[in-house]
Length: 378
Image (cartoon, rainbow, N blue to C red):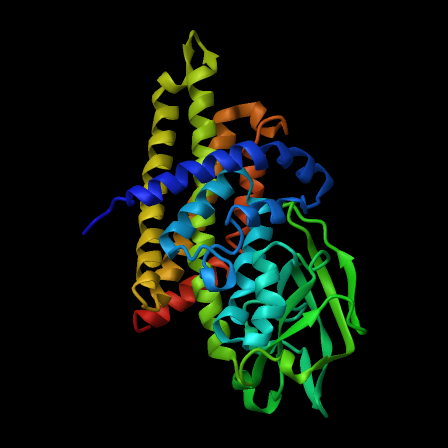
């Protein structure tokens, strides 16, 4: 077993870390305060191959493997999980179904411009009355001649108010239960597609999030992604996304740990740096150990994807553990900072707010436990 990144992956990590620290870090404070995503980032990242990086050169992407993508997510979240959230919704959730099951026409019209940073993507699944239980979505897409007519409401949609198009999940045949769920592309500006409000959030504030309404929204039938009955394709999309998000959580935890370690070395109390006191040392040791364990879980799940496997159990384990570790690491970082942990001039409060998002978002910790329970035969 080889636990080391390849030389190419190490070089990529260093290169992308420099980009994040030079180009993204200066934007974070303003993006967080104004709760807006810096739109200029997408074309800039696209020009360097940092947008939609998993897609192959055939469509203009660099075609990196899943482990390298996870490394990339760590570095991005280490600087800003809010920006990483919008990047993820665009680079994976909003575009992956088109890449995997879309027609060549759809790829030319939507995937390629997304990879170039010319169009922003979103993914619309969650509804006011349907979150963890996907089967209870109420949005419908009924066939009408050569079109589909969409009616319904979506909430907590990352990039929903800034997207040029979104991948939407709706029932085409509710009588079939979950097997009647399908996926569609809906363009911004389509009559009947409305952004009802931009949502204010506690965490990932620089990622824009919206509530959407669809009223008699008519789209061409060839905007359906693949055949009707896309539930298992949807689950595959979410499963691969969990591995990526787990990598994001490792990045948040790493940022919190690094901030706490720096502070512990510089903060003097009772005549010594507080890092000399065993109570602080043990906190940092536990943080470092848990982060390393989470990273290994994530890398293993990513490796399985690279081998063509479907790591359902491993993806949920990685997401469950990494998100909980991110919360614990950020919480301890706040504690180590003491009163300064409550001040916005230090980033640890942001790390905690952002980490808490991911014990809920992309599948709650409780849902991950349910998936794991099923996978181990319970």
